[in-house]
Each structure stands twice: as C-alpha cells, then as structure tokens.
Image 1 (cartoon, rainbow, N blue to C red):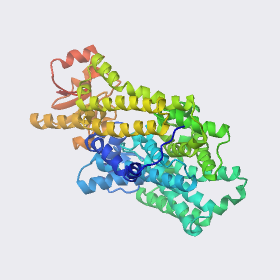
Image 2: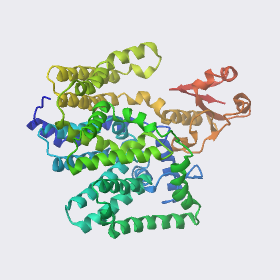
Image 3: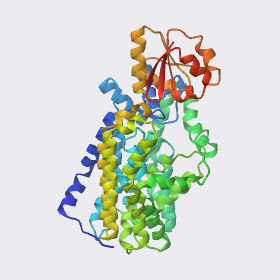
Image 4: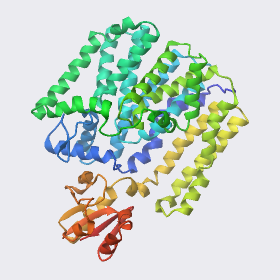
Length: 534
C-alpha cells in the first residue's frame, strides 16, 4: 500500500484540526433550529426547572422526567441564564468540544502506544472520527452522548495507564472514579458498565482477573460512591420523598435493560445499525478490525484493550432490551483508532481499495442525485444554492478519492479527501440550513403563530396531530392546548373561538372533511405546517 509520509503542511493541519472542525460546523450550529424529537424537549425541561427552582429533579410539562441525569440539563439551563434565551450554538458546543477532546485523547493514546511508520495516519484517524456517521451527527446535535463518550474514554484511558504503571497510581485511582461518576452523571448506567466490564474482560483475557480490585480499588469505588450518594441525597431532599429517586434508580435502569418501556429492539439491532453509524468508513473499519482478530494481527496491549472495549460494549448493548443507534457512540473512537493502529499490518489488496472506493463512488454521485431529487419533488428548500455547492464538493472529492485509490494506490490520501470534503461541505451547506428549519423544528412555526395571535388579538394556542407539541412553550411563552388526535377533528374545532391552531399539512390532505372545513378559514403555511385562525 503506497504511503506518503507526514509533511510539515499535514502536521500543521493536524495541529489546528480542532479549530478547523469548529469553523466547519459553526454555520450549522448557529443557524439550525432545535429538533422536535429531543432537543426541544431538553429546552422545555430546562425552562421548567428554572421556573420551579429545581436543580436535581426535573419535570416535562408537570410530569416527572428522570430519564436523564442532571449534568447536560444544567448546561442547557446555564445557557438560558447567561443569554436570557436558548442559543443552539452554545448548547451544541457541549457536543462538539467533548468530541474534540475524545479525538485528542485517542490521538495521544495511539501515538504513545502504537508507533506508526506512516505518521500521516495520525491526522487521518482524527479526521475519520470527526466525519464518521454517528459522530458527524452528534457533533452538532444537542445530546449528551459525546459528553458521556468523552468521560468513558477518559476513564478507560486512566485504567490503562494504571495497568501499564504510568503516573501516580493513587491520583489515577481517584481520576478513574471521577471520570466514571461523570459518565454516569451525564447519561446513566452505561457510564459505569463500560468502565466496569471492559477492564474486567481485558484482565480475564490477560489471565489477571484477580487483579481487578487492584484497579477498582477503594479509592476509585469511594469516589464513585460518595459522589453518587451526594447526588441521590440531593434528589431525595429536593423531591421530599422517594418517588423520583425510585424512578431514577430502578425504572430508568432495570426497566430499560430487561423489558424496555420504549426503544425496545431485537438483539441483532446493532448488527444492522453499525453500518450507518460508521459510514462512510464502515467497510474499512469493520473489515480491518474483524480481519485483525481473525488473522491474529492484534499484538500490543493497547490493540487488545481497544478490541475488548468494542466487542464487550457491543455485546452488552445488544443484550439490553432498550436500543438506539446512538448508544453505540462510545465504541466509535475505538473502531477508528484500532483501524489506524492495525492498517500498517495489511498489504494493499482489492478489498481494501473497495472499502474506500464504495463510499467515494457514492459521493461522486451526490450532485447528480440532488439534481434528480429536486426535479421530481416539490421540496422548496432543495433550491438553496449552498446545498448544490456542498453536493458539488462531495462529487469532486469522490472522483479525486477514486483517482487516489486506483491510480496512486494511496488509501490514506483517499480517506483524507473524503474526510475534508465532508467538513468543507458541512460548512458550505450550513448556510442553507435556515431554509430547512421549518422541517427540523417548531421555531418558525411558533414565531409566526405568536405574531398572528398578537395582531388579531386572539386568546389561545391549540394543536392537533402535532408531534410533541407540548414543548412549544419554549417559543410560545405559554402552554399549548392539545386536541384529541383520536377524536373527530372538525367537531372539536367547531367549539373553538379566538384561537390559533397549528397542525401538519399532510393530515389535512388525508382528511377530506377537515380540508373542506378549513377552506373557509384563514390559513398560513410554514414549511410542512399550517396555522389556522379560528
């Protein structure tokens, strides 16, 4: 496999890669609306907590919300306190910055433990992590997954330094406990299961199981126990009872693990989900890691530990009843950097070429595909020029990557071309995000509804068929009243007066009676939604 060694320019790019990534994602972070699914709910919960003076116990429209620990919600609340309103760029910084910290920790771990003959892979591995399907989305999405991943990676890295006898053992023990607690405090049980099970399985592989409590020692355990105990005590005191605490400790742990009340999926779910999560590098990452195991190419303790983390976590998550693709986030860094460590042990072959050629070929079709979709659909936002610029960047990069693969046999150059094109395309396409905001969230819809209500002197906001409309209080400034989706819409609407009604336009098309009733009313279209004046 042809390998061009690291150049001064590449080393400079590698040094400033975090800054490059921040600039690349900034337009999306600044211009994007909060998504309906989870982000808007977090904003609503934070607002409710600030109104109620709650710090450790949360509610969502009056209903207890113990699904998530406090840390990420505190970040959302902090943004509101600082700026007086929610800014997506501030909230998503706490997704992007943890991803960048994770990238640097893994980078340093790779350099120290797995010396690479081709230093260029140091840059490529970091670039692959930032632009890997799941991480790419999480970088600009307001979720706590990259924050939890950062703490898990720090915890596992600390354990490994203890295992190798690096640094002050006592200090590392406390840090191991602190990082484990912070992972729990960010997302919940996975935060303790990975630092618990992955070292245990690794030590069993090394036939050193008896030394487990040498690392999970009293200092480590005491740090976790004291901090968790303080958290649970604060929950008990703020709730003035045990209901919320029982929900937090049992319903959100055993309830999700044994017979999930939502996100219930079959055991093989992650065998399918792993491919989009690692795209566009899926074939390469999975192929190299699996081949490395089968062909006994894993030689160092670092390689064996990273491999143990991947498969221990994968099996653990597959056994748990509740599943989401995003739960795989903590193993993505180990897939990427284990591949970077192992790639030097493989000779160039057709399969390696194909693993990068397939995504490169798909990228080459980006611009023609966008043109075709725009031609046969009526989505107005597809006419935005920056989307075409981004698609053009992807197409050119795909062609250049194919040239690097088949003319120069340079895998790393092809991967760098793909990775940098994704960052440049994200920057360019980000300027057209306002055009798709009405399809992402409710800000535009609610701002229009508020103007109509004020101009016409109306009294209430109502919704029907509007998904998770209870969280629109973030933009409306008051609670929305929800009609019953299971009842006849027209009969309910006939009873309303002085009201602003919001609903998805597609539900009007599916109901002739509702369509006929609304023909006589004043309506306003906002993206895929309709505002009706009643």
